[in-house]
Amino acid sequence: MPTKRKKKQPEQKNLGGRPLKFKTVRELQKKIEEYFLSCWTKKLDMFGNPIKDKETGEQVMVQFKPYTITGLAVALDTTRETLLDYEDRDKFSDTIKKAKEKCHQYVEEQLFIGKNPTGAIFNLKNNFSRWSDKRVIEIQDEPTEDDLRRIIKEAIAR
Image 1 (cartoon, rainbow, N blue to C red):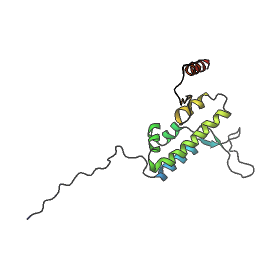
Image 2: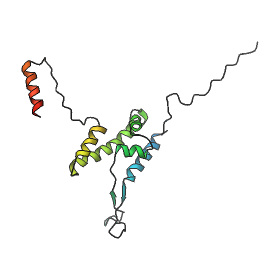
Image 3: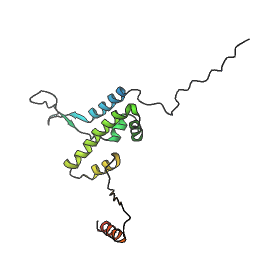
Image 4: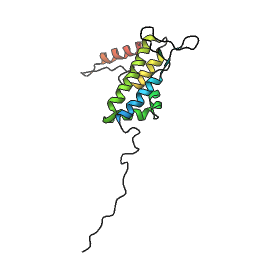
């Protein structure tokens, strides 16, 4: 009796949507390091000559471009949203979190050294969790009418 052959199913290349841009953590980490290095340039004297450290003889570098989440995304040839989606993937989560923390540190330091911290504050509120202007008031018991009046007066006074 002849055996029945099963129809060969077409190969499904990608069941979960678009293929990942980075196949390995190492590949992603290399691109992230390239981005952070791209924010630095050689320090030059007034004649355009590279300045070297007097003790070590190494080239002195200066940061000429800030570390930003969007800048990192552009360097990775992706969008800010896609970069943040990678953070949700177990495989890439730590790598993305560390890169974001470096950007976070840079922005946070601008609050102390910048002349106008408004941009840094905006960036922190929009790119990093737990930074906001929200004030949370926890009420454990039912508030009395007096409690509500006091809370409203305090809110108006601000």
